[in-house]
Length: 110
Picture 1 (cartoon, rainbow, N blue to C red):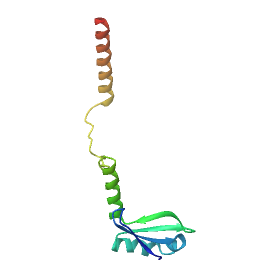
Picture 2 (picture 1 turned 90 degrees about the vertical axis):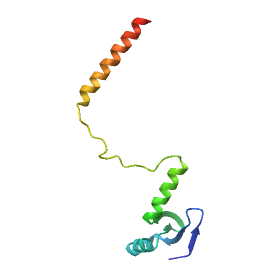
Picture 3 (picture 1 turned 180 degrees about the horizontal axis):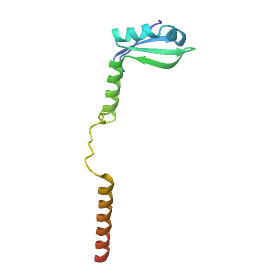
Picture 4 (picture 1 turned 45 degrees about the horizontal axis):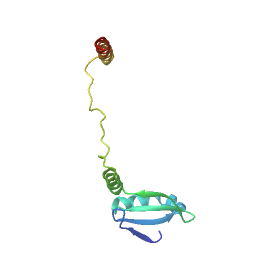
């Protein structure tokens, strides 16, 4: 691995730069290193950055920081949080009929 760069402006993540050939040859040890010591690995192709391998803890921190900067909450998984207990098609039809009747009543009053 080549020189370590401290990205204090980006949550203080320690960044290591390596070439894509080295990354391909050492992928599993790189992942193990990120598990042991969270950080990020910048992967380059001919000295140009092409990808970043980042520890999960740092990825979560970055996503949280990004959500805060956009004045949004982090994404919430809502799968399984809604339980349908009725006939949606019938309820939709009923709501449509009520709307139509309301429009007709308003039109009469004009």
